[in-house]
Image 1: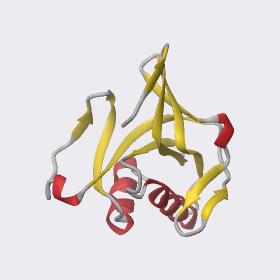
Image 2: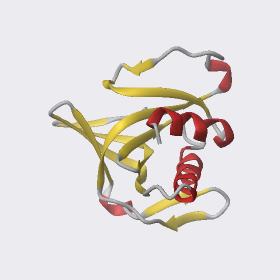
Image 3: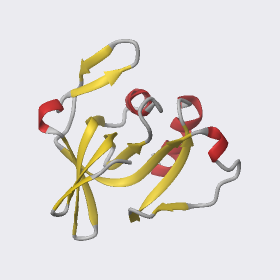
Image 4: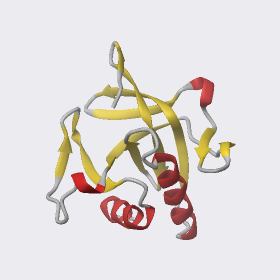
Length: 149
């Protein structure tokens, strides 16, 4: 996770979305499937008639304030997201969201089959979930369950 600090704002490489009233921040290496997972989560939420929107894709600004973590899309790419095999597409988005769940996309060999609850040392106040990269069929239900949607 690459960060650039400026006062209390960090710039992260990831994808962020709002599902219902819950903010989700997807983090992982380039090519790990963050954008694809975000598209799948939004599609799932819409089939369940739950509000879902992107906050941003690729470059995000994250700010801590009052024990909360808020994410904003980088202004120059707000309203745009990568879509596998289709390039950059226009997306419906919200300007920011308070993050309730951090999702780390990892290589399957780095994950435990029966994981215990985890936290992120950079953001210990936020619930965290480790999921296999490029595996939306496994990841979507795990994330939805964690969000209690």
